[in-house]
Length: 398
RNA sequence: GGCCACGUAGCCAAGUGGCAAGGCAGAGGUCUGCAAAACCUCCAUCGCGGGUUCGAUUCCCGCCGUGGCCUCCA
Image (cartoon, rainbow, N blue to C red; front, side, top):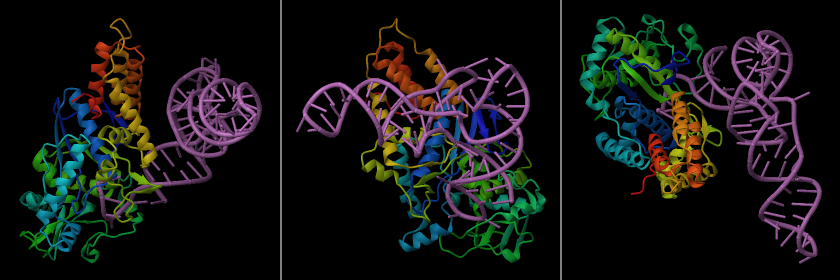
């Protein structure tokens, strides 16, 4: 299997650390609101990757975090007069319902930051001990001068990172940092429900350290796959790399970094700040189906940016009907064309960095062949159903 | 400033080391009292310049242009 590694910027042959086992960590959501299609894209893409691994006989250990300790979580829980845990439970339940509807297999674990505090404190402590982090007035910062490779995912290292533009700066006390690129791993806090006792006083973790600690706790010091939207590449994932490697002393932290493209609307990336969101539950209410939505999401390569349109979605709904119909078609007699060449084509497409657009094309060819009686029905139908399942499409009749 | 994509007919878009899918729009035609619909036909030196090759739209290098991302985000 060959996958594109965002770190090396090349398609590489996938080789897990342990034979036959894939340790996969995917960045999850901050559940202060319901999800949108951009989120669905991430989780459908990595669900498809997982299914492809499993189809090829790998045992996948799949972990996806929940960022429940966060400024927005505090703000929204106050607005709604509920606890952070209640807000998390509510939105996570909605998230699960939507992902179930999209036939996304559930990860083995959904760790929450609030449940990983001891591990985070231990991680921060060890970073300080080893001289990779320093404490000032209750804040703990990671010292990026200790790790010159910081910025590898961004494609820029050293002082050049300072030239990055930003519309919004995080609320970090720059004056306390030794170097402007140093980032927070712990900060003082007194918000109810988001504050924890620590050697540096009451506070809460920085954003990046959470993932390092949760991945470490559930999957160990080294991962095979680390995934997320490409907007997390820098600084989030770059920070994670230097933290985790400084903590464990083991490299590489992640064998293959994978980032999916962004979902847009009318040419602008969907984001909560712009408010240009299309929600999964809304589309389901409008009558769009699981198969149609998954096809539409997978009809473009996972690394491509794309724009949502209802017209496009309607087209893929029609293709979904075609596949569903073909799965019930008698197909041709056994002496007709065998389906093996199509299996090979599907395999080659998926093997080439998960080329789902091409794989879908193969499924449509099989469907067309079955309906026209050109492809033998005995093996053709079962192959169609089996390969569609790799893409998370449900064709088998209930 | 950097990173990553992309640049195929008026528009959208697939694709390939060897005569360039498809859709929409447009032109002509069949049919029709006129029109619509349907059907038929027509419509591309694949951004520019080099290189590799018997041959490049396809591979490599450079340039130009467009877009996305870049210490909020998935």
